[in-house]
Image 1 (cartoon, rainbow, N blue to C red):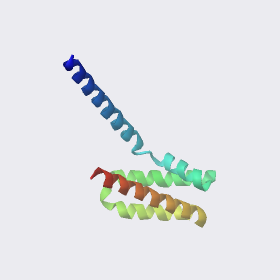
Image 2 (cartoon, rainbow, N blue to C red):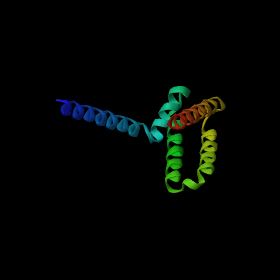
Image 3 (cartoon, rainbow, N blue to C red):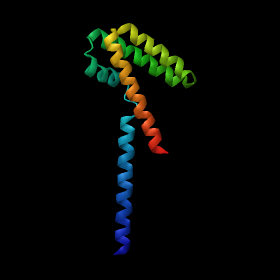
Length: 113
């Protein structure tokens, strides 16, 4: 009886761990479309802005896959390209979203330690 209970407890723990790993995996790497969608919800983008931003974010993502050493340079390049597409008001919203994202990332790293 105790063996069965222990085995059931182990399966439950493994099942929960696997489910949490899948959930984390699904959140990671949302992609350019999700970034544009999130910005659109807050800044009411035009179709033209959506198209241009998707291209900018896709290009950024590809550069990051190829060369992570130059991350800061690519990030600056991306943000300058975004600023050219958006109005100052929409760019301010975008910059605020970046700050929120950085804060969430820092919080996750802090919580891991």
